[in-house]
Length: 363
Image 1 (cartoon, rainbow, N blue to C red):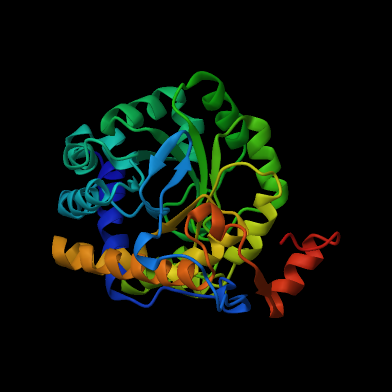
Image 2 (cartoon, helix red, strand yellow; image 1 turned 30 degrees about the horizontal axis):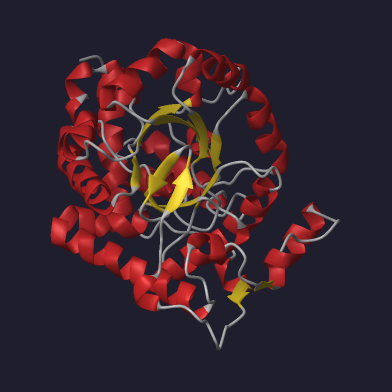
């Protein structure tokens, strides 16, 4: 295996270990600035709460979406298998981590294809970086989809991370046209996904114009990949990597807060996955009330996915209970009702939304 292929694979394991063991959350996603109006007469049965929702012509039993976490190293196969079993069990969607390592080295393909083996009926999302799409063309995207028999493919935008990591791809020219070509040639729906810095209204309009089917905003306020790269640089034995620790710390809080990004992207009225700092069922309810279609979570599911199937199920059950209680206390028997629930938006989040949308805040 060439050096570049080895670096890609080992980097995937580095990232997983750092996310599991280090404090790499930064910033404020905006959830503390949102409060539901309590419904003292909810007129619904909490035991009959209906979490079902639709996204890209698929029905899910819950809006919880298992966001991309891992794959591409032999030691990550068990994690993807466990996450996939949960997706199958709960009837929810799941995205796999960047498939670059397996496209460079097909021997690693089973660390991703295990997801389809364990979740034959689940909605699975393949994953490829925008730079790799530009450099290798639609063929790589087709291979990524085929590898897991995916229902959609996410093209991820991670240029903050690329700017900081030593082996990063720092030329972003031509990525939009590559996405446009993919949308024209690939039958599988294309999702554009950020990785912790959020999507602006301007970027969303470019993506919709290119023909993408959905956007995953992945706003700031959760896992910071600049912080991850800072930890990675600190642990590096290469003295030339030390300055990247400072650079990672400098930009650890960079990005558009999740709630602000969500409000900007939702103006189009098209399918949106909200992610970035969503940690509870109450957080899920807040982005659903604003208009999100699915709610992506990664970091809260990582520790239990490293432990056992039972631990992961307990975590997901707890998240669903929090969502159910919120729906009940807002009188929302269905997800569509929750989208009509009244909320207050206050503080810095309100100020940022009003500045970006002078005509007023939706809701």
